[in-house]
Length: 639
Image 1 (cartoon, rainbow, N blue to C red):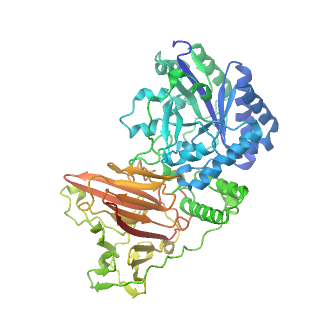
Image 2 (cartoon, rainbow, N blue to C red):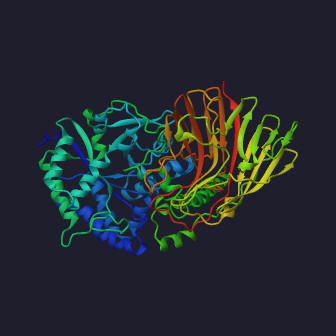
């Protein structure tokens, strides 16, 4: 038994009536089975304090479905037994949306909390625990004092952290230097609670587990910080869902579990209460994001950020339409209601296990697709030289030198910007690495489509290009034969930049695949040892020292990638302190995500960036069309 008061415990219930597997006509049943019993806990346990988190959208729906429930919750919040924890107007993935959308989402959510409960929330739950340093400013601007986010995944990439920090408050900062407090949740711990309540774990075994967590020291833990909808209701989303046991209420069993924990010495508090305890004050500032995992998310590795960006029914296309709408709203200084509609179109649940009925309804209310983004004209070329043969095409303009290989689908043999470096992106030839596992050609400017159980599809086939000269650029165009059809491909070489256009829509519908386009293999002989990635993940620009990693590595046969950058301004740079390669793309055309690989192979390095337009996980559907992609490549000296 732990000492009374040594372990401060919080029960936090996440409510989400937009949950992807809930049909509209099922919502009243969810309220009856899950939300009303949640408040009944407070009647049955008069000493209990807990936290309830929901988006403004969910609370608005509850106001219609069950206004008495909202009144009860407001009374408990007013008496200090419940803390209303915020998360924005909509449950969206902050590191995948523009900073302005994050700002509106948090402010609109606070307005709803204030209207319904008489006060703005001071604690926020990070949606899906998808964190970036860039989103911190949006929470601070909305008046939040602390964030609730997951410990487990960020900890993996920060060996310098002390494991005991998970039981205290933390602090982190935005890229602008503003700091916010952190409450840590532990996925294993809350999953244990869920299992004991569902009857999959014996109560004595669970109590012993919790006593080890107490350890006789002043600590705070979230005994539970997850969905309310999983108790006494099964949406049928997963085959692994435990079946409901006949005649046994999980909410009733929860009462027994919580009483047993109190008997073992746990004090149940709200997050805001934990922040007042001097023994739990933060010991160190931490940065959760890293080059290996720029956007850590919740739970086991299958839950990475590509889940809401590159899979689903058509995540890249859906996000592109939202990016286009964000641009339109910003240009016209739109009213709050227009931003609210956009936030709701960016909801995470539209991007995972959405039911057929809900997808049909969503299609009718999505922002309009954007027309093909216009190309920016360049300055008139003062110098251009073209050397074309069957083996290669070399184009030199004012500050660009590009060499392409027609026999390999116009892959880049070498790309340089002479005022910066003669060679920045290359094809590394077979034999460059001694290790046999790396005995291959590693191309740049190519596309790969990996379909499980099928041969790899590439655009590295022999082709016959045509050249056209314009006042501001030279265009090299072709159609590369592939197993899925002919892929239109154009290189445009300007005085100061290179553009790649891929007509992927010509290949038809998206197969179950991992699709990587615009591959850039960096010249490891040019770049220095300390690489830094700079981009925006839902807020101000962030810098990431690039460590050894492979974002494209599959997690399992079902999950094809591990991590990615959000790159919510459609731009990213790679630099070593002396030179910088700048990559940009119009997200309103297709919302691609950049991924990096850095490996040390003997005495040499492999450095690569790809742009993913599709990744596999259990939410993937095949009916979407493919989308065209355009990439612009620039370079500059930084020292």
